[in-house]
Length: 254
Image (cartoon, rainbow, N blue to C red; front, side):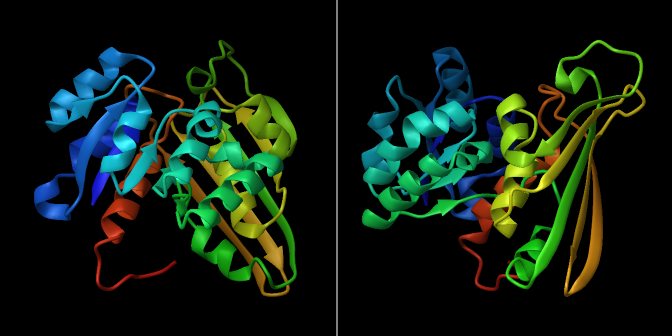
C-alpha cells in the first residue's frame, strides 16, 4: 500500500517512526505540509518525497493520511476523494460540520473511495458503536487537560466548556477530536465538559454511556506528545494500528 501524508507534525513523525515498509507492507512515499521544510525533513527520514502541491501525490498513492487540521480536511479531502483515493482522517472534528460530512460522503461513494476515522485518544469506541442503535439514552465525555495543552496560564482548576460536542469542536478545534469521534460513533451530539487542571500531566478522557443495554464507563489517561502537548500519543498509535490492520488476515474487534 502506497501512502501520502498531509501534515508533517507530531502525529506524522510518530507514525513514520513506527512503520516501515519491510515489516508492514506499507510504503509511505509522499509528504505535504504548508511548511515545506517540515515536509522535507520528514521525507528525508522516511526516504520519501516532499511535494509542493498535494495533487502531485494523488496518481501514485492508494491512501492519503491527513494529520494536519480540520480546515485542511475541508480544503483537501474533496479533491483527494474525487481521485478515488482512500483517506485516514485524524482531524475528525471537521465532520461535525454536517454539510461537509454529507458532501464528503457523497464524493467518496461516487468515486469508490473509503474514509477511515481512527479511534484516536480514547478507548471503548467499539462498545459505543455496538450499542449505538439500541436505545442509547446518554453519552457524556469529561475531558481534563493541563493548562499547557490548552494554551492556558492558570493555577487553579477551571471548567472551560460545558455543552454539546458540535460546539466544543468549534471552540477547541485542535484539542477535542475525541468528542467528534464519539459523536460520530454513536450518531449523537454528545454532552461534553472540558476542564483545565494544573494538577494533571496527562490528557484524561472519561466517557459514560447509558442505555437499555446497561451502562459502562471508560477512563483514558494519555501522556501528550513531547513535541506537541495538544496531541495525545494514543491518537498516533491508533492510526498506526489502523494502517497495519489493512494487511491483517484476522481482525479482532471493530
